Amino acid sequence: MSEKVWKKKEKGEHGFISYRKRRYLIAMGSYVLTGLGIFVIGLLTNHMSPKNMGSVLAMLMSLPFAKAAVGFLILAPYKDVSEENYKKIDGLCKPGVMLYSDLVFTSTEKVMNLSFLAETDGTVIGLVGKPNQNVQYIEEYLGKGIRNWGYSYSFRLYQDEGEFIKEMGKLEPKDIPVEEKKQVKDYLMSLIVC
Image (cartoon, rainbow, N blue to C red; front, top):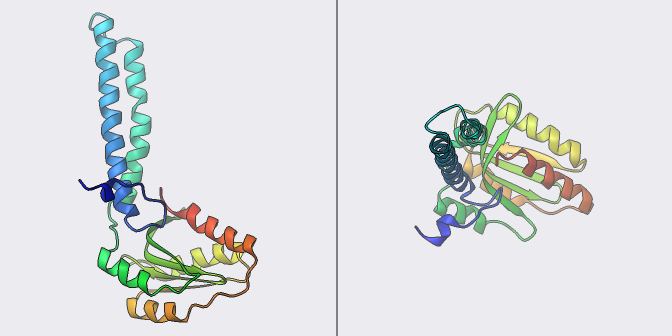
């Protein structure tokens, strides 16, 4: 595989969903192999008796396996934005606009997917990724948090890519304190499934 596929991706970077899926699958495989290896070594060193410390350690490998499996299952229904679409939207960004893509957010009740999130001083706009999501819930949930951390920020969510593109053309930075901008970015990044 190419180096680009295996390059580490950060939250909000294009290709993050497929990168994390691969990482979770590799982690699950390594936990299974490690657990089996520990179990077999325990059997061989204890005259084929399964009642040994190796069995206990092998069973403990199920905990990190379960964590990786849950992460994979959360991301499984979602996919990355196409390279072509990403380049198109990225090309529309004015200086000072941060573009995040391939986002999967979680709340206590729902898993939410956004294709894009554009953030500039004072404004955050997003494009819903997967159809048939409760847009009102996503807008209320993210909007409440953004306004909680960034008092001067406005938030809007779009289902139509054309409307999102039109709104991106209107994005203009406002005079926002640096600390407030950092808090909003940190809040958004903290919600992304990793």
